[in-house]
Length: 345
Image 1 (tube, rainbow, N blue to C red):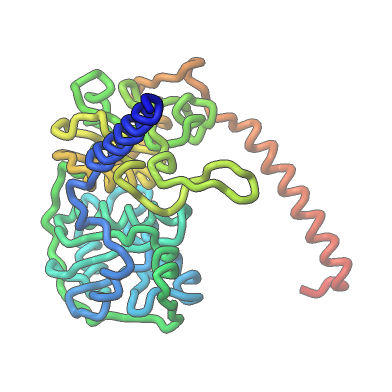
Image 2: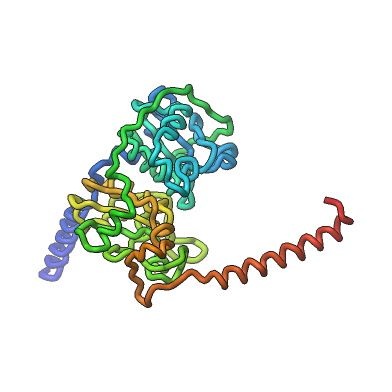
């Protein structure tokens, strides 16, 4: 009898523990930034809603959410350029957004297709927030969520009536390299390196110098996404879904009241970090658009860099050797093709 009593008490304790855990589960501070397929379907035909396919045009025409528009190319290319000059003159954005039917009163939803294009959607989110737009959202799960909700795709291109968009830039949402140098010196700002572990430690060089900015913590953008077990490999892989628990696991201990900046190689992957910080309610988040491509390649500036095994340098000789081998293979294939076709193109 005593043993049964202890078992009942143990089960009751476990039940109460599970209830407490559920009550303490992470929640978004700004849940409206992330919408579901039902919300998109209910609003997509409204004149003050524009749904943007963040993928390339060739993928858009193969099948997109009915009523969604395309920017003509992947969002990260349509809304940014390698020089960052678009941030110095926002008139380009005002013309582009007005042309595709986005005004200051328009709700804008970006969607993607899996982890390969999720950063395209978050680039769109960050750029619009930088421009001062306060009605921008992302479809959680992208096209996968839309399909799983039982919705169809369409191949008919969509164009919205042109309108007027006026930027009201929120400069604090764009971190500069000058600011990063202050952060590297230890000014109290929280810095998140959204690249892979190998990039962070300097093993994977994608600029002239490899490593990371001093004081930066490494949280790969894919690590913050919901993961499932791959049926083929048995390993856990990232999905295109975002959950409060998956994000809080990595950012939950950071101070939401302290300025927090994300960066990666080109300022693209780190826009997902920016979006997640906004969902969590961080008061002063930003994205560093220059990121490592600029910081790690500026030898004259002597930017401070950390790497466990010392600063590594991009192996140009190895890359050039690989290019030459590839060129030989291409020439050999062209020669073979010429013989097979009798010299005809």
